[in-house]
Image (tube, rainbow, N blue to C red; front, side, top):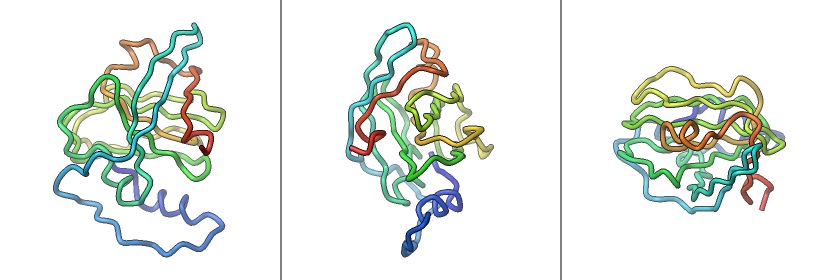
Length: 161
């Protein structure tokens, strides 16, 4: 999954002066597995779902995301944590499998979900408003697990730890 570079750079620059590193926005293969963290989604009904999520932190890791990966296990995903709440805009360029994109507000609650995104699509998938993070999961898992807007997402990277 690739985020749009101008939005990423604007978020990264913020009030600090950052030297922009060149980003290959058209990689030719998947990136190696990234560092991981545990993440839990707690539904309003009290059910908990546990995931292991990769953490892309550099501009290049975020730009490459899940590109070229041919499967996403049901208990895994990728968590993009933004430096401050922002509109998250993603796409499915070079992504061969559908994904559920879960947009997480600053309060840790799910603000929006885009289910079963279309592989290889260049259409923008937007959070529709400012969010603290975007979680990419296997396509269809939010419906299977009954994960919905308003459910709580708990992970150390979301709390700054």
